[in-house]
Length: 196
Image 1: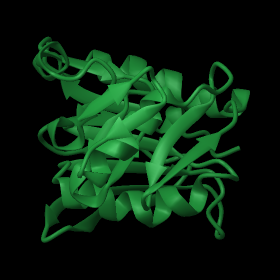
Image 2: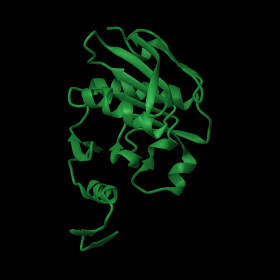
Image 3: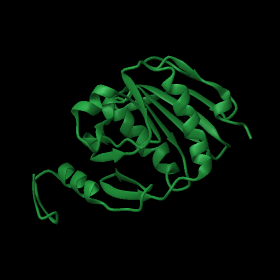
Image 4: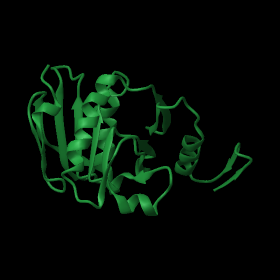
């Protein structure tokens, strides 16, 4: 791929073009820029309630995973086979992957666990497109914390990806603990998902 003066791109590869435009996208600090279904999307700042769910999960996971893995917030994960790039709320990824890869993104298939917390703007994508994308990439575990589920706040753990499809390993309302099987092998405390 060749670029000239930052405003011209020569490539025969649509995925490379999308990633190049994604990298050049200048949005307000804190906004999330993703590639979903071949389109570059921008989501605004997350609400405080969103962070109140994500940060404690990160702290719990850090103590449970091997020292050679990291828990990252807003790490861009590429699913190049689908021409998609997601920026999950949390991703558990071996640190070695980040040392040897692209400075801006990591391959989704390197993640051991991905966590998405829904918002009004991302809920449908988190429930459908990303479930399929993470399964297609072979991410062993996808935890969807769906604050806006039609039947009330729900936590759904997907796993055992096969043929681009996950199996639902666990589904519960807020207020219940969630067992994360291997490769994580840890229980997320019920207090992380307050019933009220």
